[in-house]
Length: 413
Image 1 (cartoon, one colour):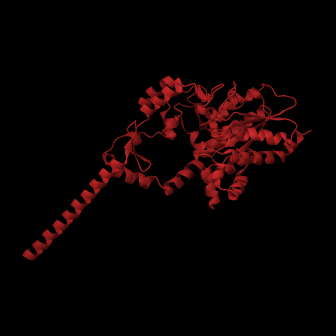
Image 2 (cartoon, helix red, strand yellow):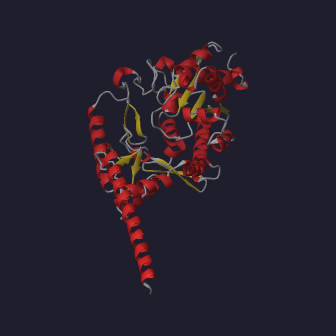
Image 3 (cartoon, rainbow, N blue to C red):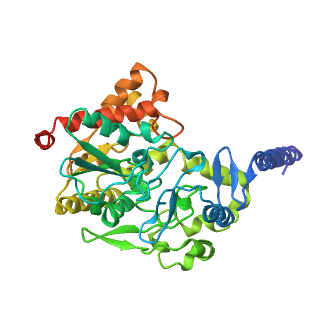
């Protein structure tokens, strides 16, 4: 090899080495920057730019703290229930007094007779916090306003609100079977908030929503041979929650927790780098992956959607067996409303169509769209739930839809 060739090769090696060293320095600086910008929580989960990075840590410490508050506080509207996971605390009052239950665990300031009253048409509401009316006073909730609206059109109507914060469709059905049947409603309205499809697959809420303030396990249904089988009932009592989290892989129902993957919680070589973990998170959690996840939960042929539809069907059949009518009220979130205002279809349109084949669907979305165009979407929502104005729109839309029904017209006589 000539001196000139040897010199060129040496120069090339130096340039490659220089590039490698430069990249290593840049990588190291970015690694340090991410570690400085990010932060660890009590359970050693690392967060940066709003993302929780792998490897995940189970929320053992935070759950214990939440449980200590939960068990020691009298200002709670829910309590542990072995059949439902949690249920409204009789006469429970939230911090600040915004949310109150009567002695029967219903959102009301009066008690109700168990039997139907001859001179009253009884409507029972079931669903989650959107049905309960979180973030507004009782008088501003759509259930309360619905009663007022209908009493202006009907001789006598009473609305019983059995909604519970954090509930999935499964818990709403179980609450109907455990409590709602006893009140013999003429009509049951189920508030369909599409995200509840995910709750149907969940057993421990903080695994679905990290940091959630409901530190309890719940039962869930499993779809088998086109029927439903219930697992984790009775659900774990509060005093066993933390011990179970510490040994979650040995828990007999771990395979039924859709939002727990053992690999997410195991240390690996590449995850020792926060930069690498952030890069992987950015690639796997973006708008394209969210679109795939949407199909996973709401696609008409997906297992989660089929489970949700089956729960609705069982709900309708049981209500009808008790002599009542069953209808569904579509309750879109602010995200869904803004999506439609932007010219995009609902992510869960297929699910909504499947639900309409199970029972009549009352859809306040057109009224919400009209109201938001007249003002702004912000006026219809508080931080997460409907504002007093949003609840008013829902109540008016439901009242108008019911008033047009022939079955409803027959009750006016």
